[in-house]
Amino acid sequence: MDMGIRGRKAIVCAASKGLGRGCAEALAAEGVDLVICSRTNAEIEKTASEIAAEYGVSVTPVACDITTGEGRAAVLAACPDPDILVNNAGGPPPGDFKDFGLDDWRQAVEGNMITPIALIHETVYGMMGRGFGRIINITSFSVKAPIPTLELSNGARAGLTGAVAALARKVSPKNVTINNMLPGPFDTDRLRNTSKAIAEKTGKTMEEVQAARAAENPTGRFGTTEEFGAACAFLSSQYAGYITGQNIVLDGGALNATI
Ligand code: NAP
Image (tube, rainbow, N blue to C red; front, side, top):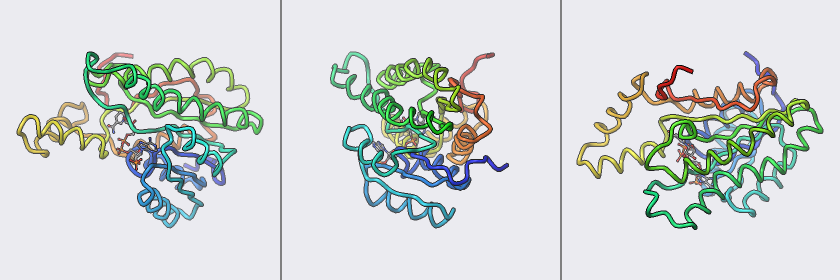
């Protein structure tokens, strides 16, 4: 299926690997030109040249921390008028409520709530003026079912979800949509790092921990970045104009709810 977005321009944040890269690749496969960012210069340059070589689109790498004002300015300078914006950043660290100080909360809110709001604010009105826009926020299934060890993430991402809920309806008459993608367990470095920490704590091997975690999921496996990217490309497509303000859970059915 041709998504009808060939020649469009997208910003994909935090995209040298993992879910962000999955989205970048799926958009590139649809002929979308990209500006991608992540903090490590060598990694983002390598990813950009690999995607450009594979899909024949323009891919501009920006090495920056997207959670800073300077980082966002650098990305917007490279692409001031995107048609598609995929908001993403690293997640806040795990821990327990009693150990978090206010600065931990401020940092989590800055990274996972204020940063996407700032990028939306800078781009959504241009999208409305041009009559096309697709904004996707990568959040987490923790917005629907809180993860006890990730309270910073639960809070900041829920804040973003609330912040864009009304806006998604306000901008929709101009063919601009805003949706949130809520990943469950996907096979990325972040998930592997948490498995490594569990293995070190429990004395189990990494393979045992990964196998047990995969077995907990109704599908018996983790999601892939290709699956995540394909869903992002559809939500970014010309056919997704009637899907807005939604929180789309991609978790292999892990969230056990009837509706
Ligand atoms: P990942 O595989 O570790 O990749 C993270 C990517 O983001 C890397 O390219 C990293 O590159 C970049 N990045 C991190 N912080 C950044 C920053 N401040 N500015 C710019 N780039 C940054 O992680 P992932 O699994 O794809 O996770 C992406 C998001 O989804 C995270 O917020 C995560 O918490 C959330 N999530 C993931 C899962 C899952 O199962 N994978 C589930 C629920 C939620 P640099 O380090 O070089 O900057």
